[in-house]
Image (cartoon, rainbow, N blue to C red):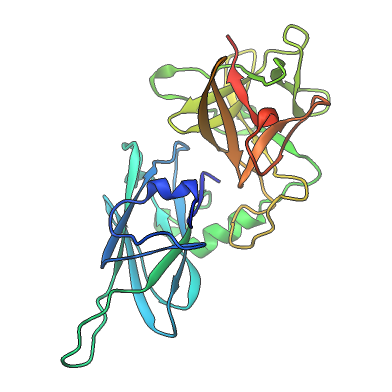
Length: 307
């Protein structure tokens, strides 16, 4: 996943909300006007993406919701009750921008004669962006096909994988020819790829291979295996543990996380960051393993770039 935002009272994800929203409720924000806007960081991962929105309408009324961005209509759908709507974000809609400005529009309700029209009672609970991988006729797959294809991607017994360029996967390339940087844990150990067990681990610097870097771009990061020829192959990690989501709304449930949200924090030791994917944080376990398993960002979930 690239984005999974949940809105509600006191939630930090409310920061992306623009104008046109009421005060947040327990698990949603409601449109206060005919149009409401939010601003997302544009996906770094190249290619097409799917926008997912968990939205509801009060009562039994039917309401048409249209979602647009700078390049046009992403989706337009009639909604009754609560449902998840999906629309395609083609690469052309975000390949040259830093942020995505998403606008929600609701059709004005027709009121009886001599009565004032009422504002739409539409609530947005969650917004997600997932990677679209399949291609159909006309160059794009339907949203339903994309979700099905993403859900079909399940790992076997492996927690971590390298998408190696030698096997046909595209290596990670940063703008301006920049390369990723090695990262360290809160224990002062270096994060690396263990070729023997086939997993990401951490160990004492100088005693472990220098073969893993974090490719940073804006508010997102990609873990990369750096080979001897300096190619950066993407490392993907599967959420695990009792808190790994089984929510069917999330199209990547049970699959691998390809891109992490990068959350920064200034500390006495300098800038540190957490890596979040699938609603969980990457964690450096005391036994040397790395897991994507924690719901909160604490010491073990804190990383930094190696000096």
